[in-house]
Figure 1 (tube, rainbow, N blue to C red):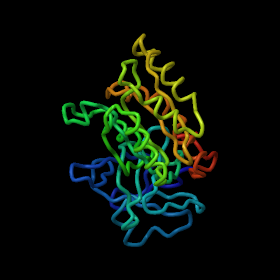
Figure 2 (cartoon, one colour; figure 1 turned 60 degrees about the vertical axis):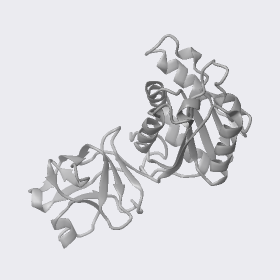
Figure 3 (tube, one colour; figure 1 turned 180 degrees about the vertical axis):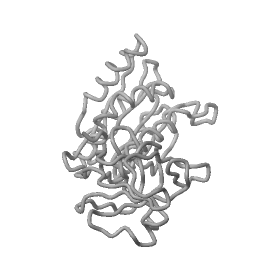
Figure 4 (tube, rainbow, N blue to C red; figure 1 turned 45 degrees about the vertical axis):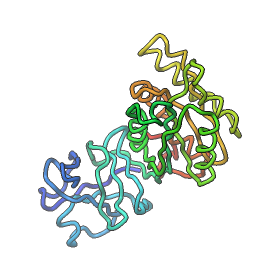
Amino acid sequence: MKILRLYAPSLIGDHTLCYVHANKAGRSCINDVELPVRTAHAGEALTDERSAGAMTIVLPQHAHIAGGDFLSVGENDALLRRNAADETFSVCRAGFLGVSEAVEIWKPISTAVLTVSDKGSRGERVDTAGPELERLAFNLGCVTEKKKIVPDDPDAIRETVCEWASQGINLILTTGGTGLSPRDNTPEALLSIADKVVPGFGEMMRMETLKYTPRAFLTRSVAVVRGTSLIISFPGSMRGASQCFEAISGGLRHAVETLTGLSSECGNHHHSHSAS
């Protein structure tokens, strides 16, 4: 699916390319001018009051965007989210909008983030990896609904993950407990409750992060499936979690869509965070 037209009467009219971002107040800006963003379908009249005071992205007639859905433009370019209260969009990630640019419509993925840390659970350590995973996942249309910090205790890990899976959380990201110390228990806890093991996630993390450190092979990160939940473990440091997430981000959304039956509207395929 591609953008057919960009139309903003208050900004000259038709555009072939523009830059969208959010200002300090969180409002959408087009080429540094505060302006709401909305969508319309091919053949729809653009002379009404809504078009006059907004940037209108014209999409094919079959495109359907519900409240809370994401509009992903290009590959790692602009990311917009439809506001449930009206027909406008909020800017989640700044980037360019261009006529003929490929776009995907993403349904939000329910997500939870679990930080496993003895010190963090006692308030002796500030959790930086958990918020970083939440931020990175949001860029793939994953909306964090639950988050928690537990000690490096297998029972606490199992109990929390099983509870979230039973509540219908489709993506559970854990951080911490993937090393070699006696208190690193996360992989064993996850494997003990798994319906399936997905080895490629851990393999990709270790392979790709060797670019950053020769010790990458020491991480024991794993990925498992329980019911309709994909559960992936990451290292406990913000840097390690970020690098490992980057390594598997290309297939993450497709994996959850396959597991849950969700699909992305993109015209050519129904997977991946990139639009080709």
